[in-house]
Image (tube, rainbow, N blue to C red; front, side):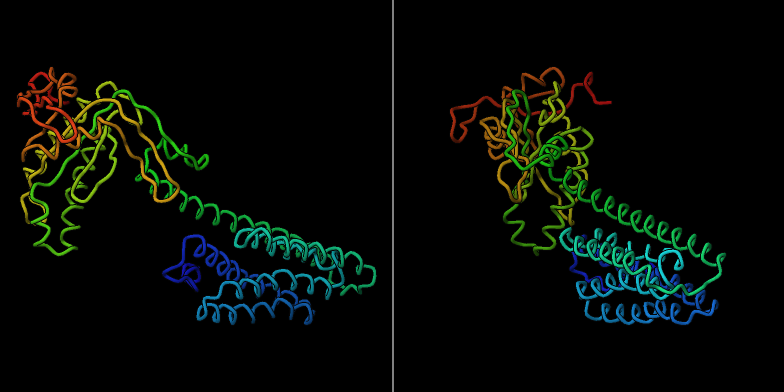
Length: 399
């Protein structure tokens, strides 16, 4: 069955198409033992014509599946299989003489609209539902004119149990597999979405597409940037450069997660993190400075791609606007003067330093050793007081 589930699935198929192909093939191939059993039972009971109907399915399905494995044409394969699901049980019922004499074998035709509901659009499913209803009505009209085949009563009773039990079992297995696969893909999609957006924003967007923006009165923003990245990048192949940045940023991601911060984005070699958004927290400045110290320690303590990297880190605290705008390739982002100032703290900082503004200093001065660095001229602003964070005070060590 595992092998059958791979038939016709192309590497470029999306998760929905791949699931539809697997369900169609698994059900089609999975019914072969039943059709073989039914043929053998009717043949043993001396009913060669009824035995030929399920035998027809046993012959056509392998051939149709082989064609599908070669062509990967799901539409044609699906139509042929659904048509057999619908018509063959009806023909078998007609050959046996009606509903009772056939042990309600037409119930197998219900697998046709059920399968269609799982693997086709609703409009196409309506076609098969109408076909099933028409066959049932036609059977009721023709019932008085049919000649019973004359199978033994005990035979009819046991086949009734097999027909009802078989259809219910297959329907349950089919639905169970579909739901489990759907949940698997939903979980993967949810995980991917949560890697892009905060959980609160993800939930809001799933409720309906809209612009999301909120004012956060107290947040801290961190920018980290590789010193002399441009000349270093010119000496590396694109693949090695991407691998190097991936190693660095994965290291930073672990620290961000450990401190409960929110990674906003990476822009080239620049890494942006925030604390206090979208979930407010009173210790936003302390948490982000702790993370910054650990980032510097992590970079200083190891090499990446055989190279020793040096980072500048800038931090600022203040009000920001946070949210998601646009309809395509959206990201959770921050706007405001506090964000711009944090970026300036990084770009105008010194290598191996964590440069902060007064607004951040006032929030963390009791927990960290900070060195005043006077004032610097900030692009787009006046002179700004800055400090360098040197480390944690002994009474404020984390843990």
